[in-house]
Length: 110
Image 1 (cartoon, rainbow, N blue to C red):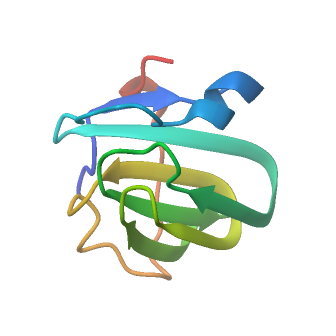
Image 2: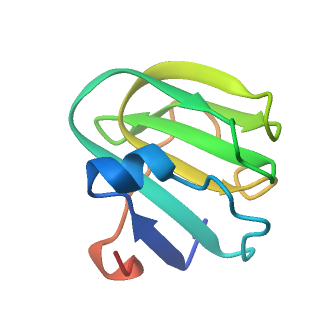
């Protein structure tokens, strides 16, 4: 098992989910933001007002569905998920669809 991030914020309100990582000029190497949803369905990620490239992981029922690096301002992608993780670009380069992903409760700070 490998750790992708040691500091994980949870986007647990509509405002936090809408804002995501917009307006951030940099991210620590060990950082991620997690978007948790009640059920798996198609979820969009946009990079409007996001100034840094991101690795985005779509997870449904604990299984990675898609991993994509998105470019600042221009990136857009969608896939099925009940959990989405956004990390600094390169942090998820070894993660593959079909792998299990666990978000540990004690890894975040809300």
